[in-house]
Image (cartoon, rainbow, N blue to C red; front, side, top):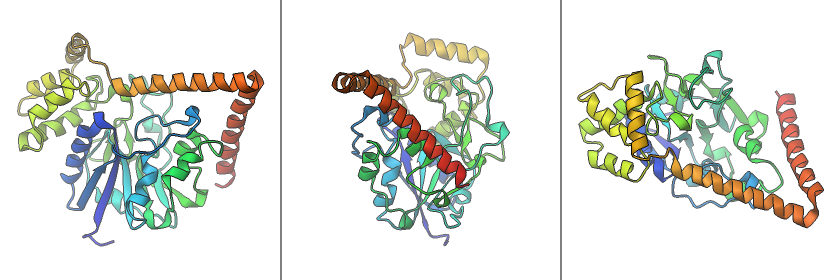
Length: 332
């Protein structure tokens, strides 16, 4: 791979995260001499499956499957989520080998990946496909056909978590944890931190113990002119960023931004409460609409075929999930 190669990076995002994409891009470029091209995939008009139970969980859930097509089925590319920040030379991730596979995703998580007691954290973390290297020349993905497959061929979980559209030999689990570090930061080691717990993402909450790292990147952008204060204020006005973030940045002055104290967390939380700030308002409203659609869909199934048909349909999905898991296990 030549040093002059362009590193094409596609970032899954919706409108509320577009500034987060800019912060991620700034952190990537600040640590590498690679020719980096970053594209936020907030504008791809992809359909949903007919079955709302398999619908996208975010506005950009399915966009990663369009990357080979967007690349003209040539070269390699990287998919990232918007809620990330980079601390090392991106070349380390970009040049990871495929070793015959078509995609390269996260390795099994180390014991240290489990962050006990963190606000908003799941009971157990599992490896993710949120950092993905793609060999676009060998991927014939058509996102429309892949989404259509959710109506009977596989479930959302099988597609998004297990990459069931590829054989086991076509998937390499070779992305080190340090390049998709789930809410863990180790100075000098972490290449990319993933603020994967939505409830405590730095622009939504002051409670993330590693949030100061993201705010320091923002502060540097403000200092260099890469970002304007007016832009930040507009994001707050739109309800995408917490109002207390403006206060936190002002208090940091010329920096660096430091970890917050319990007193600061309480004060910032009060500021956001007084401003009636709602974390990820649009995302949670979309979730409510999806849940209502699922309820209506299942009620319609029951009306047309009786309660037994709904039970059979649910059991079929469970069997599909189990069969896929067995296939994965046997092929290892």
